[in-house]
Every structure is written in C-alpha cells, then in structure tokens.
View 1: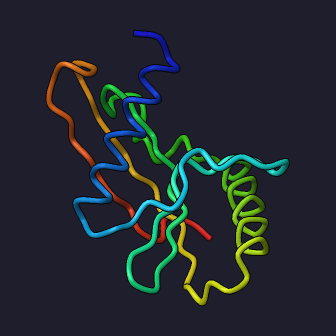
View 2: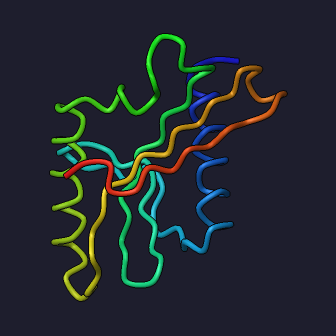
Length: 120
C-alpha cells in the first residue's frame, strides 16, 4: 500500500471515529495557501481542527510528536482563513490530534488516541 492510500485510509477511519463520537464533519482535506487541515468537525459549540497522524507503532516516537511547531503554525494560519470565510459561525475553535496506530496496516486492528486541545 502506498503512502497516499494509507493516508486516505487513516483519514477515513479518523472521520468515522469522530462521527461515532458525535462530531459532524464539515470539511476534509481543507487546503488553502497557508496550509492544510485534515478534518474540520463540529460538536456542539466546538469547532475542531483535527490533524490525523497514522503510524504502525510508537517505538520511534508517538504520532503526535510529528505535529511539529512549523506544522502547528500552518494549521493555525489555515484555521484563521477558514474562520474568516465562515464569520457567522459562533463556535469555539480547538486544535486536536488524532493518533492512529495500525501495526498491520489496513488488515489489522487499529488503536485511536484522540488528543483534544493538543496545541494552540
């Protein structure tokens, strides 16, 4: 399985997880000149900007550690553009990371760790 299809698999499973936990998916793969946001989801008054990280395991490092300071800045800038394009939304923005661990790829079990308010 190539990197792109594995990424799509991870984002699909992350969206499914969020829906299962009461979120409504507003956007997937939101792209703008400032960067990309994997998933934008709403739950109540929370507007979650979600970065999805899929890894086989955490032996080298936890998946969240790959959301670098530079990546966080790009996500924040993209979120600001999204919010400016949706001014009527009276929602509380939050930045989450969804770690997905799939030791056997698509064919095996998947462990998901949802980190709310992961960065600001």
